Amino acid sequence: MKISDCEIIDLPKIEDSRGNLTFIEGNSHVPFDIRRVYYLYDVPGGAERGGHAHKGLSQLIIAMSGSFDVVLDDGTLKRRFHLNRSYQGLYVCPMIWRELDNFSSGSVCMVLASNTYDEADYYRDYNQYIEATF
Ligand code: TYD
Image (cartoon, rainbow, N blue to C red; front, side, top):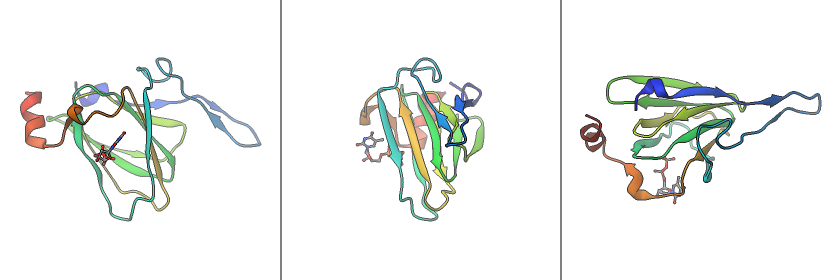
């Protein structure tokens, strides 16, 4: 799995003078079944999240409010994505190391995941991740 397998997905946006609406359907707008949703909020200035890779989990990361950066690393290439639109999501395939930083005040990071939480699915040590990648 490489960074080139990860991409920004444009989600449907129903524009309306009363406010816009975006929806996400599993296996349609995201290339997986959605089995879990979690979100990061009240992130203090300067904090960093992530710092791990997943063995089998696919995710879509969305800036529901405010902005933050996601740095993806496949062991060969690194790429920084700035997320600041609630109608776009960053698809992250399995076996990609990710770090999140540069959170704006009041930002909310929502993550759609292809499976329920399982600590055994994590690489939390970068060297172990690299060993497993090559
Ligand atoms: P972690 O995935 O390391 O957070 P992040 O990638 O956002 O920095 O998870 C932080 C803690 O929360 C860790 O102890 C595991 C726990 N957790 C759950 O219990 N369920 C979940 O769905 C998630 C994502 C984390």
